[in-house]
Length: 115
Image 1 (cartoon, helix red, strand yellow):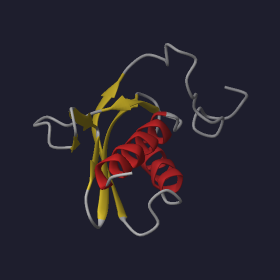
Image 2: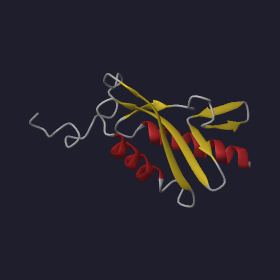
Image 3: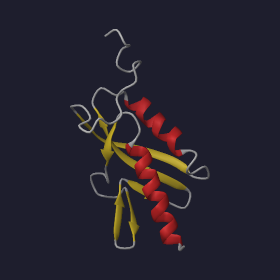
């Protein structure tokens, strides 16, 4: 397996992990498209793999506190890249609810179960 294959696999795993985090609507390469990893045959938008760090660009669902979302992203990625710093940039916030039955807000973020 080549280094490019390894990076592609790691990038794909990071992208899938981030998409599964509560409050994340999707990945984003950012306004200038700089949060991306070049791969053979294309690029992975929303994940930038560097030698000593990983940067992810995300779109967050409205109503999810951004500090909570970014903390969950860092916690989810830490086991995948223990030797790299994790930088999270929130590129946008969108209204609505997950259309695919995706992750919902924990009760504490929604104001408790009784609201």
